[in-house]
Image (cartoon, rainbow, N blue to C red; front, side, top):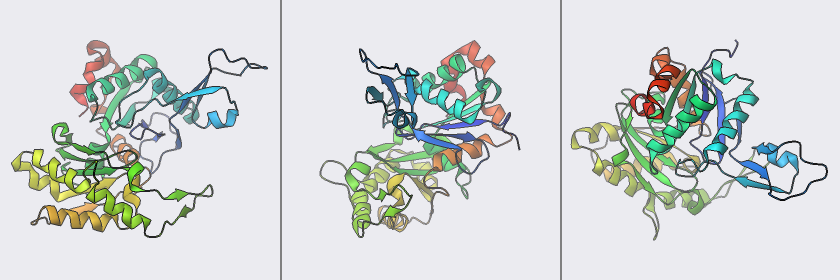
Length: 327
């Protein structure tokens, strides 16, 4: 089957990796580091470098010691440098062998604890003004996780995330992320411990380190509350009439949730926090790419075209159009 005309899905919800592929697929076609490198100012090379910008894996392959690197995305989902984000997307399009003008684009973001309106507007501006996409949808990772996780119905639930740098609990109601009720805690991968991946893909088992890491994530520490407190605070910020429905369906994602025992520990925490809890916890189908997979599922729906911002709509309204159609 040709990829021509199938929507493209970019996942920028992880600040360290960019994932890209086509709607309807079970995993991204490409994954590369979200890093952009440039030749150092005043550096003299003989012979001169073949180009000015390196992206992702190209940086290591260049074996050029005179490069300065930058990260286009921050860990809170905000954009550090829109020009660098443009380079990430250009590299993704080139690697996928796709003409951006021919296929709609879905972008997954995770900007909720930094100004999300500005981030979405920048993404829309780059998509339409630089790449001339025919249609665009920007979907928040937590909203997509709740709406598109297999077994979920109605688009209402609680998304629990724990990745590098932080953990969060984000309520979603009828597909809309409740930004005012989202809670972020500082305890994440940097404070909870690590499992190490070898070059051949095998993972070193840290023994009971994984168990201690899971407990640390839930219990928190002296400088930051844990996931349990985040869930409790998030539910407390929701309107009373939606709390029961939100907490009845819980999804989780992020690197730290892959520690053995995370799912039953999450269920115990929910029962402790909410004594009448009789809901369900739904793990990701693909823990490494769950947000991308959710975006792929949405973009494969027959209704997706009607959800997108068209070039004509953007041309008439400008970047703020993203707030009218993307929630």
